[in-house]
Length: 220
Image (cartoon, rainbow, N blue to C red):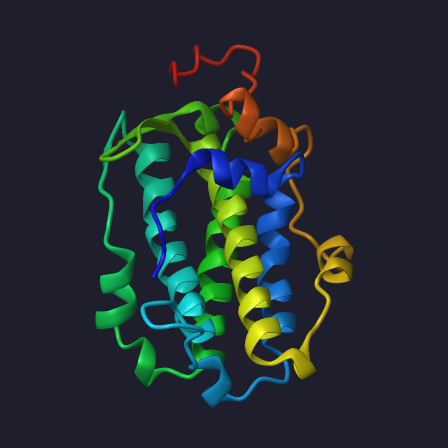
């Protein structure tokens, strides 16, 4: 079971790290955390009412698909409505139990790759565009990127905690993984500011305007 999205918690999890790079590295970090665990171990819940590691992976995959839709709505529409969804019902009713953990990880990787491809090619001013979330109110595209980079961190830590608690003999340190630089990261277009500037969570994720561009939409 996942709790509600708490912006401050997600911002704290990301810290000063570049959200774009954090989102690129998350699938690799996830695979390293799952390495060596059997399907039975991945499906074991740490306590009644708590998600198993496999269910967390299903949640990450589902969330990435939903997030991709939100990115596109906000980038293309003017102040679109962004509906919340029941994360537990998604995990319960979308067949996560019938899929292998490998299939769910692959789903997450594929959806994340598609979304990162979109973010790389969007113009800078798109990150200042806003949608109206049904629970959190006005939220910019840049803020979404930063929050969900933190969301990854929260759930990777959750998986590591479950793994350590249930299978201490298989404990893996993730610190080295988190610090390791990827072999090949997506290239940003020449002159495009870093995601840290486009999606800085503590500054309202305000995107820098290009010369001659229309004034960016005001956001929260």
